[in-house]
Image (cartoon, rainbow, N blue to C red; front, side, top):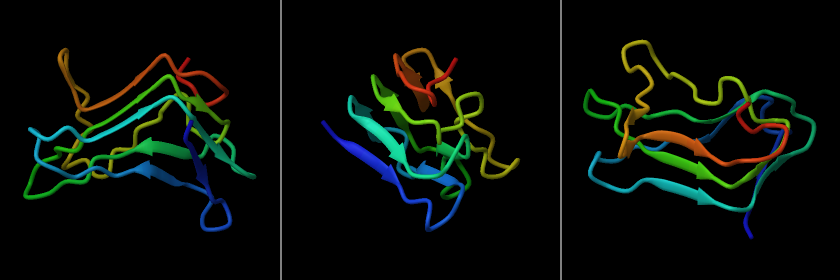
Length: 108
């Protein structure tokens, strides 16, 4: 089991991932484990896309992870810029997604 610990002594808010790769690549997959932090509350995003060459292409899928209360449960994905809106993809081609997570930071 993997634990991703957010270090709040660095900053009180931020993102876990910022993927940037061609849309044909697989991206990041977190399956199982936990996201933890000390001291933060509802202040950390799961991720944001990193625009490269004029398009947002990064992919992050988070499934069956126990998320601590530091994760923003109602707005977990950060839009980096209005010029590059969040791309959730379409069925069968999800770019930013959560599935079956638990804990205080899990989506309602």
